[in-house]
Length: 383
Image 1 (cartoon, rainbow, N blue to C red):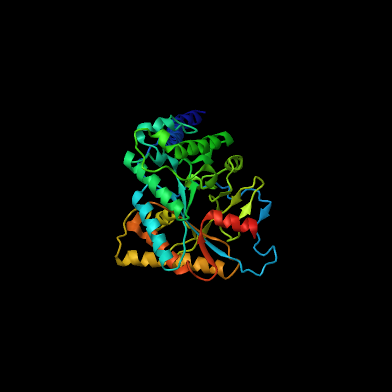
Image 2 (image 1 turned 90 degrees about the horizontal axis):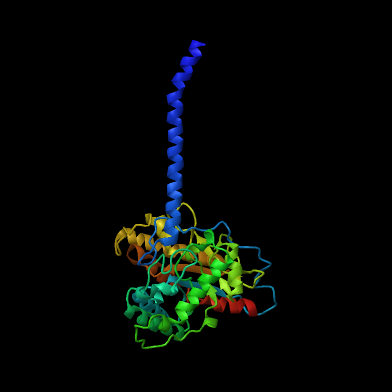
């Protein structure tokens, strides 16, 4: 009995230490989770998102889909068109507006017609002085994950660039307003609120920024904004319900590993997913998003310099990867090839140069249409 007593006495310090360690672990987990929620709700950035992780992608990729487009479903002597859809998220940089539009002009001059789809954040059409006009689904009025327009003058310039894009046949689509990861916990009403904020800020740019003397009026109307892509590709079923209620024709937030043609859901929304592409030097296929490639290539660090041997090698790997994936589709079912880039020149412009290099190789090939998402939808609905 004496021995048992002393054994028990020896165990007490060990039990106390174990309890303290367990309590410390629980405390750390609670702090980390709380910090994450606070960051998502209130973090305000002044530029395009710069992160050290890949986008928070929901496990939900494509909801129940009662119909998948079959290009051979109707008899036709017309060959199936190979669509190449080149798109951009964000829309803040005026220089990138000019560069992308200029590149499209150069391609057309060579007989290689190309039209981009721009998924814009309407928050870049709002000056910080007027930020309280935006009320996100969660968080304080004026909160934004990506900041606002950098100046009053930039808003006037951005309107001009949008008008130029429209006049030249490019497409404007929605990337929401404040760039929040709504797929984490937003309900239908939250998504509808964000969609309404996009409309109010984008289409009322003059009223929302009374300090600016605009040299042009925005030429686009709500009925011309037919598509959506979720920030960080963060989606849930509630988003698709809200898209249908808001009259959107298509969404490009999903991911495709099978290179199949788009599907249309019960709400009438086409799902046009971004493909996963294999690039030399990477252990697995990566979605065709410049940000994801950047994170997997150099851990989200800008370490490559244009003109260096390593930069040139990476450029070749990217162009070859895009082109090889395109060929797989081109010589099989001709499923659309979608690429999603941003207005950020990570790794000294590597990804923008890769998109240009790929476009120069494929746009202009027989029966290839480097066009907009809306043109693809029109094609599928009338084929």
